Length: 532
Image (cartoon, rainbow, N blue to C red; front, side):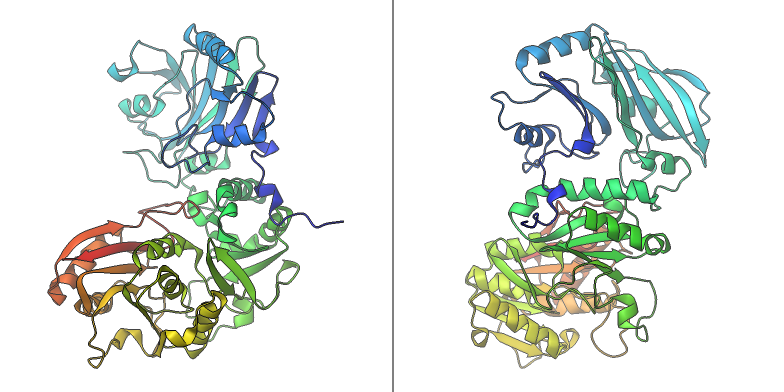
């Protein structure tokens, strides 16, 4: 019997787990939070309507959303097969023949047990939204809201007027998602549709929304997160399936490398659920699951096998040498026996940007590691590419990546040196483009942590001083202790020290598979700098 494609459950147009009801003319689905309903410049084929149209490809008509749902919210969404059905359902909603129930985790300013949410000028005609407290804890409350009015209900704005800002909303307590959920919808002539409340709302009430939920909830979150990345599977064989709190999975990230999954765990809760998480990934189609235990500690004396076992914890072992691709770019990765695999999926968009701007450029890649940025620059048609790293093994791996892309390594420069002290004064030729992507730990000395500190500013200043007029710098940091604004400030300070004027700074936004959480993009931040 032929083997099913790897990660097949994540490649379906719409998982059955998210379908609440369907008949010949209508479908009710449970919409994941953050997923756009229809179209938009950032939909990238990942919006609800496009996915459902793919699922029903044999039908001549297209699905049409009937009743609005906030993109940031989760829960019940109703769609119609044709325009006449859509008009009928919209008319029913306008006549008050619908019953909605929302759940929201909110800041609790001392709310009464029940009441009416005040309306305002933004709501158009006055609509009645009733509420009652379901649960309380730690200055927050879980409230249920009911209305029979047509959407939009402007739930967040109306709650904010009574001081009950929704957790995760502007002006509310920060969180990894908007804690608003469409629990149910009843339309005359149809059954009631119910989308069970996500555990995140229950956790938010107790202030534990930054904690890992139980095993059952984790399995559903892994399915939801991996499925949202479905559009990437047609473009590349390496991407992030789940991104820590960006997907509600605190302390857990998962990267896909071809047919295998690499599960990274960075919290006590995540480590405790290691086996269950690995089994869930196996059920989602991974041939094998490797584990990386990313504990916050001095790792100089830690056992490599304890942190990154050579063999997968479940499933089949991968070959020692796995080749993955991002479009035309090909990279060699090794999944077992070390914390690093040879390629960081969160830098995919920056590598794609290098393909666009690298042509005819003289490129310097500091902390080159296995040369993924260098390969992108060379494929783009760079005039020259210099890769600097202190590790001879990493540079040998970089040469291997060049050869894998049909590039002759001897035509490019590989320098074994401490990137903190290079380029030297002897290397006086200017560069058109410099990449600085230092690891969390220094590659020299006693492996001290390389923080966003004066050393980083000096490194950037040194690189800026070697850039040609109108040269570009890609600066990356993996430190989470400073905001994006603080990071930009350090780059400006570096330009002041180098006496080079910056004419443009462009933040690299969060990738589709690395949704931001907390203060900004995660797990890394990056800025493209252009000099005068």
